[in-house]
Length: 243
Image (cartoon, rainbow, N blue to C red; front, side):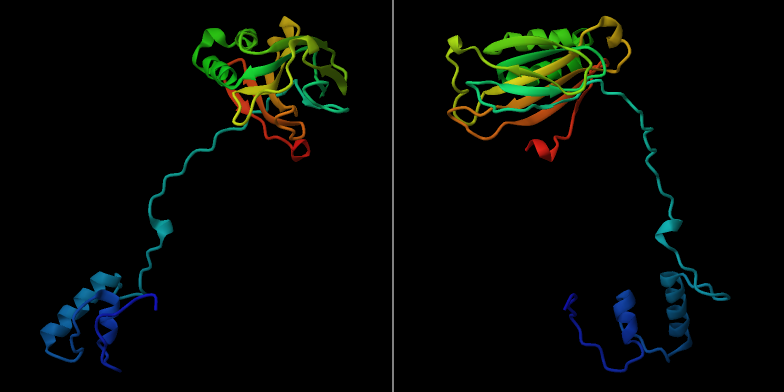
């Protein structure tokens, strides 16, 4: 049973329905005139009957409601597109990234970037308007990585670049789990100053896992962030094909 009852109502008693509906004591319907009149008035107040017309039904739609105004959708062009390229991927031999950019760009690869450095740089860009240039992001990451290199990228579709850690650095892994360094953070920025004023999105930062001796999970894009000229940061949904 969904509801329990403390009293057993008398079978076929005409006043039994009142106990379930109003929680009243059982009062005979046929009694003195004063009791009948009081009972009729109570029922009218409880169920809001119109004595001279049909019952009035109050629904939830009759109550005043507040509607949250919808925010207008704004179409923004993303000049960057980055995905994993062809060939094998490992820390020893490097990894290829495939790019499709609308304008000439600069690809900067940070190997062994500290997790806290990237997250701190993204937060700083949102808080401080003076640090909203992507160059401040690049400077912050360069101070907290094992190796950094850059490539000039044209606007051709499907252009691939291969990045790797030089062998003389002796980097074979980035430590046991949980890690404090991302294997690779690839950042795309617009190469021409004139193009930076045309697009609201000024940088694309991709966190890429590259297998090594300590963690041989296949290469994939873990996160992708878009940075705007107003200091906002948006995380892109990672395609299942990259997982």
